[in-house]
Each structure stands twice: as C-alpha cells, then as structure tokens.
Length: 430
Image: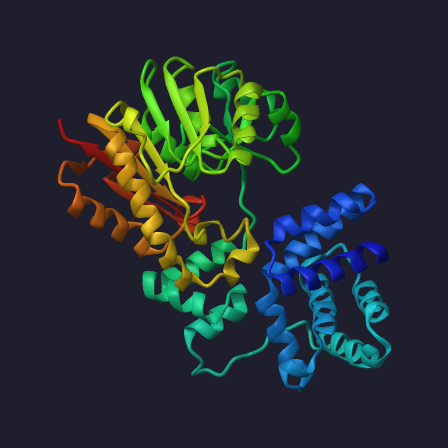
C-alpha cells in the first residue's frame, strides 16, 4: 500500500502542475504501473477523492498550519491532502496508518510539521474550519462542498442561495451507474430480471440503474447495454427517432446518443454520426458493432459547416454541443477548477453548430440542442438567440414519462438524480 500512496502522490503533484485532466493522468499512470487490483482501486479512489475535495482539504491545512499558504511546499501540501482525505472519507484506512504513511512520504525537514498537524486534527474530532458568522455564503459553500469560491458565487447567482446549496450537496454524492438496454435483443424488463438489484430509470424509457456490484463491463462487452446517464437518454427520447427516418447526430462521439436513436428506430433507417475528431470514430464504430447496429453511417466532419448535399434532408437532428461541463461535476472532479468565464469562448462554436444543424433539418423536422452544463449563456440564452435569428423554428412541447416541458428543460442532480443537463426541442415550420 505504501507504493500505491507514493504513486498517487507523484500523480497528484504532476497533474496539478501540468493542469492535466484527472482521468487522462490517472489512466496513463495505471497503464505503466504494476499494481494489484486492490492497489489500483486504492490509487483510483485516493486520486479522484483528493482532486474532488481539494478545496476543503486546503481549508483544513491553512486553518491549522498557522503559516502563509505559500510557505507550504506543494509536495508537502499534497501529502497532507492525501492523509486528510483518508482520515475524513475512507473508513477502511485506520487513522494511525494514514498518519504514519504520510510522515514516511514527507521529506525529513517537514516530518514533524505533518505529524503534528494530522494528529491534532484527529484529537480535535476531525472538524472542518468554522467560518465567521458574517462570512459570505459562497465561502461557506466552498469549504463544505469543495468548490472554488467563484464557482459557488456563479451557482448562487443562477439558482439563489438555497437551491445552489442543494445542487452542490447533490454533486458531492456518487452518481448511479446507469445504462441503456439494447432493446434489439431484449426488453428492459428482461434485462432487469436477469441483473439482481437493478431498477428502471424513472423517466428514460429504456434505462436501467445498476447496483455497484453489477458486472458492468461484462454486460457492456456482451452487447446487452451501454453506459449512458439518464439525462442523456432523456435527450434521445426527446429526439424521438422512428423506424425508417434519417437522423443526424452532429457531435456523436463516443456514440451513446447515436446508439439510442438507432435502437429507437429498430435499426431501420439511417443515423449519420459525425464527429470532428477522426481518432474518436472508432469508439462509435466499435460500440455499434458490439450492439449489432447496422444503420449508422460514421464519418469525420466539422459540425459547424453543414454539408450542402445534406441540407434539409433530415427529419431529426441532434446537436449535443461542446460545453463547459459544469453538469458532470460529480463524475469529473477537476471540472470544478475550470475558469467558467472561459466558457464564453465556446458560445460561438455552439451557435455555429446549432445553425448548421438547423440547415440540415427538413421542413416539419425536429432539432434538439443539448449540453451537460448549467450555465444559462450556454443553454436558455443560446436557444433564445437562435430563435431570434431563425423565425422558421419554434419550441416544441415534449413529455418523457411525465417529465414535460414547453421546448426546454434543465435537469438537475438534486431534483432528477441525473447529470446537470439542458435539452431544447425546436420544430422547423412546414
């Protein structure tokens, strides 16, 4: 286990210094390391956990260190983060083991400091820092829910203080394992009957929530299902593809929405799956082959530039555009450290994709716009600007198993137990 902690330490330090995405850094490190399955699991849990809770862990360190934050070396701070995370959130690690291993990892000159801070934290009941009564809500939320203050401020501005706290609290939970059943081969009911502990998703008509112990990889490899959050499945249900239609998915990789549309069509018709990156197309092709789907046409294409040969030829077009990703905070812990003001750079890209998608919709057809973010400028405001520029489109009412909306809906983790997600349905006039 000592080797696993040392690997995690090096990985966390490198990832933060380089600004790498957490999943890429971890995957590369585990591919190189020779670890037992138990140690791989420990490294994964500790790496993601420290990344997710970094703000809270730093608040504890800075409150107890009685030093200027800059006076603590990054490597020593990371060792403290790792130990504090184990003390607070990993019940299976004894306190003495977490502390002793942290001291062993620490350079000689800082061993006493690390040992004293961790032992005093335990003696005092492992309490989080107590902020002054007049502290802003954003500061309190930052410590309690491990998000930077600017992000807490943004969410308060969007939802108000009470709802923002509810959303942040939901993002601290681990999301359910959700899949969509391959209904070419079996019904959702048959799938659930064969997987103990599984249950139907409340809204998505073909989704299943799996228990943690379910053999997810085996089920996916067998082509019985594919991983897809319920929010994404709801977007596909809003698209409403039918057998024999021509459907366009402009930003398709890794393919789940294309697969869902093809299944809704009974694999009869055409689903054109485009993505800008050639190296991602194999994910779509391999997934379609595993599921036994034959109606997909996969190609590299820039979603911002509609192919003249395809203008006005599709009955349904899906634009699941690149976005800031704020809605998947519970799955991608490093998203919280993004500069969300930087999302403004995505707005022209989103608008261009939506406009190109609109050009591909035939009269009377449906255009669906979706994101996995909660920022209004990428969601409601983007749709408002589109409708002002395209009077030939109008919002379309939809109802997915009682989840109804007049054109647009924002799905939230605290309300729907899904990713934070936005879906808009826009009908082209005849």
